[in-house]
Figure 1: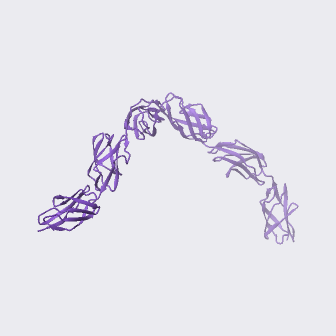
Figure 2: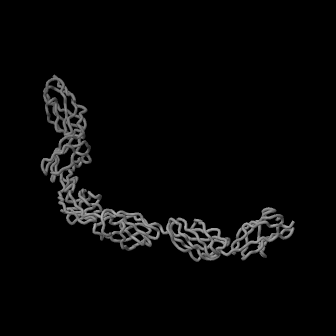
Figure 3: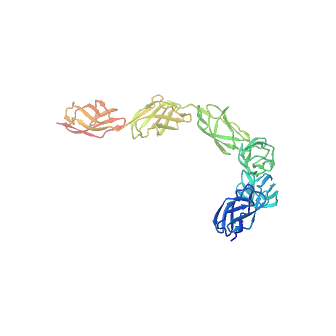
Amino acid sequence: MVPVITSLSPNGGSNAGGTPVTITGTDFTGATTVRFGATSVSFTPVSATQITTAAPAGSGTVNVTVVTPGGTSNGVPYTYSTVPVITGVSPTSGPAAGGTPVTITGMGFTGASAVRFGGTSVSFTPVSATQITTAAPAGSGTVNVTVTTPGGTSNGVPYTYNAVPVITGLSPNGGSNAGGTPVTITGTDFTGATLVKFGSVSVSFTPVSATQITTAAPAGSGTVNVTVTTPGGTSNGAAFTYNPVPAISALTPSQGPAAGANTVTITGTALIGATTVTFGTKPATITGNTAGQLTVTAPAAAVNVSVTAPGGTSNPLPYFYIPAPTVTRLDPTQGPVSGGNTVTITGSNLTLTGAVHFATGTATGITVLSDSQITAQAPSGSGTATVTVTTPGGTSLPGLGGAYYTYLGTPVVNALDPSQGPAAGGDVVTITGSNLTYTDEVRFGGIAVSFTAISDTKIVAAAPAGPPGTVPVTVHTPAGTSADTPYQYLA
């Protein structure tokens, strides 16, 4: 039977060839030749009704035929198309939201099947072989516009999305009611800026970069929004506040160490946006700022404090510098680990003492006796602790003078040797136990006796005379008194 071609899929392709083509029909069994016009091509017989191949290079319209032992089929047209070329896109940019009408000009647009902005396909209207109209989709950055026809996909022509500008900061964000304050606007996508407004007032400006604009605030009052307009749209509003001249009413504390570095709270009005706080001529570090309060770190010794804010410079207030305290002596220098004993601290600049520490422990019951002496109750602790005193002038330096306090364990008596003796007394008794180094008293009954502390675990004492019977032996140190240990007088 003579083969019959019923369809080609696709029925056209690029002049360059290579387009995969499926030939459908009947009686393809034993096919020996497939031709595009006069050009024979390699092919794959799929079945008696289907053959696959690839179009060779060519132009115009040619007939595709299949040859089998039964003869040559009918010819079915296959049309070659040129690759489309874009020569221009108008306009070449638009807002990120899309919707901008765009005209694409070029050649070879006949049979256009797709128009893309980057990877986004859009609907379009073919006007002629040289013109297509469409609308830009939403997007960002710069993308290539392409046209696809049976001849292939065109070159890409750039289309730029103009992002809506965003203001991220104003420096400063406030100024004098009279205007004239230099302002730097920072943000993104300022390229092509056409307008800067403070509220409803347009101002002249200098584009510095895509992220920065400089300008000067106009006269105004209250708080207004600053906006930037570009081809991409109008930015968010950033608040700019007009301020009166600041005034300060109080400093807390109004005194501090000559070395500075302490925190001072400044109370007043119109302090928002403060740019400078000076102690005399020395600048302080601003750490907090509201309309009615500033916190700053004081510099080293200076005098009057003033605040400079967008509205001007405030009145001055006096600030007094106080020397740091010192600790030179403690009495006693030892005590129990449980604390609670009263310690007299001698030094200098102690009048304004606010805290006393034994290492990290906080003392209680602080009493100021004079500028050179205070008393405090030792907290619990262990080992040897450095005692420090804190005033508005700072904290005393550890290790200066005799500022060390030793915590002692309560003395313990484990045994007496011998544990009995004559009523006439005179026996040498060895007392063993622990925490005995700082023993300051040994008693038999109520009688204090002479003794020698040999070590932390041993004391030698002489028993006094006593009536027949048993009396308690105790050892006392700055940490307290041991439990009773019996000693027996023999008749």
